[in-house]
Image (cartoon, rainbow, N blue to C red):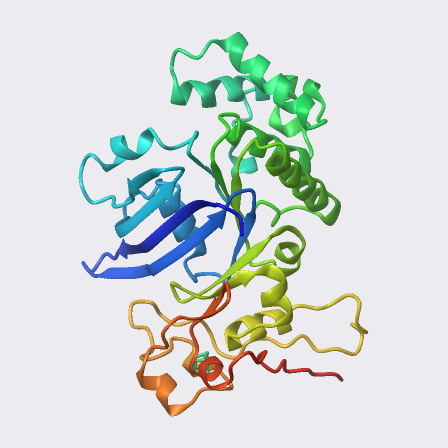
Length: 342
Ligand code: SF4
């Protein structure tokens, strides 16, 4: 078993609504990243995965508030709560070199008036305003060489780069300070398949070369996660409902939601012309008023009476964890996959 790089414990985050209510978006989530591994965070839109990423990266801004949670990383224990006025100053020293966030759509946020080299200098000076320009350029040049990327990119404007190259550049820039943990939010979503492959290969090389010690990869794209991750955590309605080694989850899902997500994806090795993609019936719940018991019960084809009243506890089989009454009654059995052919 690999050494644990990071553990985020009991993270709870809410959005303050206009009517004065707090709407929970992440509910008492605990997640770990072993040293040198890539952990995927998956689930439908609105399940809380980006909010959890922001909370762990310590960039939660109003109306998002982290009301509970601790991040343990490399012997440090960081209080993630954002409620006190000093939270931003407290968190600032950890951002960039302990935890770095590559937010959704980062490549589209590059100023069109800056060359990439100017962006490099701006980013490094945001962490240390005395960072010498020549040192910043040298660092970026060395990093690009290390990753077999062309250094001439530094003299380009964003509009002169392809989408794939822009995304790789923002990834390189967000990791120049060698963060222990990179949180990459939907880094491949806007890319074509060959650019996705190039980015994934670069991320794997970065972990291998110890530019960072671990990655949380957030996406709803399960085929991508199956390729790149060592472990998967599946979120539903603000909670992690299953997590374990990627191979275990893909071939031995213990939670009906994970099985339903997997059944929603076309497998190109099968006869895709005759296979219906199985969607998940219904929609994710309103987190302001979630269902009682198991939050997935209104959409679950295995739901029993107990599911509607009692929240399932988290169970473990080895390092595979899941929270489901059906799984409790069926030890070590995979959820039967629903198959539909025309
Ligand atoms: Fe389905 Fe019940 Fe398991 Fe929830 S606890 S996923 S409703 S079987």
